[in-house]
Amino acid sequence: MLHLSKLLILWMCTLQCVNGSQKNLVLVGGNLQEDNERVYRLIVELAGGRGHAKIGLVTAANLNPENSAQYYKEMFQGRYGAAEATWIPIDIYWKENNSDPEVVALINGMTGFFFGGGDQIHVIESFYIGDREESPALAAIRAKFEAGTVVAGTSAGASCQSSAVMIVFVGLSYNALAHGVKDYYDSNTPDEVAYNRSGGIGLAPRFVVDVHFSEKGREGRLIRLLADTKDEPNGATLGLGVDENTALHLTWDPDPDSAVGTVVGPGGVLMVDVSSASIPTSRGFDIKDVVTSYLTEDDSVNFATKQVTFAPWKQSLSGNERFDHAAESDDIFGSPYAPYRKSREWTRVATSLFNSRMDKHAVGRTFEENPKFEVVMSKEAGNAEAVGGNSTTTGNYVISYKGMTVKIHPYNAVSSADCCRGNQVVLLVLMSVYLFFCYARFY
Image (cartoon, rainbow, N blue to C red; front, side):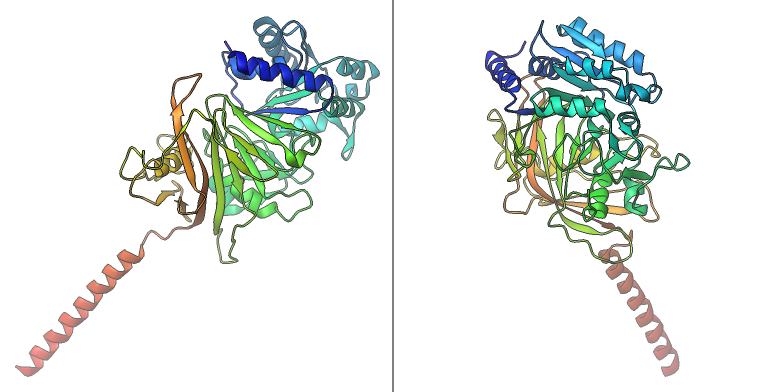
């Protein structure tokens, strides 16, 4: 059950949406669980509430769009009380429906929209005509959204909302760091990171959206994508990585640059800012001064100022740290090629840094080598801060932080300390040889 205060907030948001005074966009990081009442009920309430919400199901990203739509119909209408949950029959098999007046009329009768998961490029292919000409169906969804109708999406359905460049399908953090990002997808090299220069359908503010984030170790690929594309026409210096079964609820009126985002659900959202990052032109990817913040349940961020506000039920970790030292990792991005794939490894190391009494830095390295990369996390920045508390919904202890700076660089396995020790050994050997010859000559 939702708390009465939260229901009141949702009711007020619903009234604002009806009057068209506020935009509502809900981005879910994928793997949305059936029992995630906070996220499902949020969408239903913003669409008009139980018994009134009419939700249009956009499942174009899925290769089995009708089956996907049936699943979400059972969820929204059968379990969470929407009056209707109706499939919008537009996908790669029925692209022509994006110009059908009857389908456009169906869209205009909805009070909310939900984009399902799959492959985000299929949404672009289904809702645009030719070379990025907006279809009547997409124009209708955009007009409804601008008038206050809520739009939500999970996984690919969240990624495709981007106004900035759009990450395409899969790709690993290590490959992004080692090889860069490409503006095309090659199915023969699925581990490479690809993106679409033109971006998504453009409902979200100007930041890059990534999903399945902490669980699949996508921090490196988001940082590299932002660094490589920030100067492109649709590039951005800000990126958001949304964890699975977790949503970021964005609201604004009227300027999307003034949006406020609030985290809903058990995971978190990593905000990555490369606007002040330094990227040397040396061989191999090397970046420092990347600013990161990790928001968890009920935390919010004002995108106009990048100001993070922690939930009032969380307490500062400063002076309340539980451990002496931060954790380290030999597989910071949870490589699928490791004997055992680690999930949420970056988050584990980062939160342990703020939960340590003695350390100012934490280190993680990639499982892959040639080259191996090192990630150095720091809490020395003046605005770095962390809080923790027990979730009001799950009871689990969660940690949020802001202002953590990150450096990523190629890692030489022979450290400077090792070099010094090696030099000392060589010097001792040379001295021994010299003394031996001196002794032999004397005698």
